[in-house]
Length: 186
Image (cartoon, rainbow, N blue to C red; front, side, top):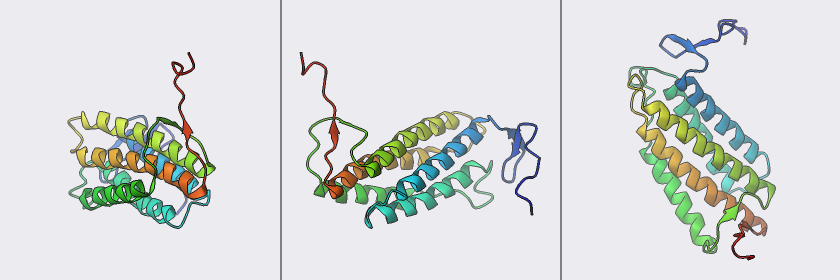
């Protein structure tokens, strides 16, 4: 089987078990952005994350692939691709709570940065927020099955990525970059 099919040369793509749609369809944009988030998590993993953070991201990458499969399918229940977020949201919350117990309390807004690992996790967080917005927009389309379970997961994932960025800096002994209000210097 060749990797190229030429079926998308006219600007359309096929949904799993469904029709062909324009490549700029909201559904295609949403699952394309999920794929982008997955790729940036792979990039973050390549920076040498700790043995505590890396397995978490590996698990999340698999979940994002499942989310992409659901979004690429007009009738995910018929094809047994409806994704159950409940155990995964609970796991994200447990990871957040566990790391926060080890971090100093957050007293300032922080800017993306610090270590390369934290910077990549901050980038992933911002992409995750964009993906969340795209899926909320997709959910307004009556032709699309309910996506609220995906929105909940992404909302919690962006929180986790924020905490992970702080935790990566903490593990490496690198200070978070705090925001300095212009008013403070006046």
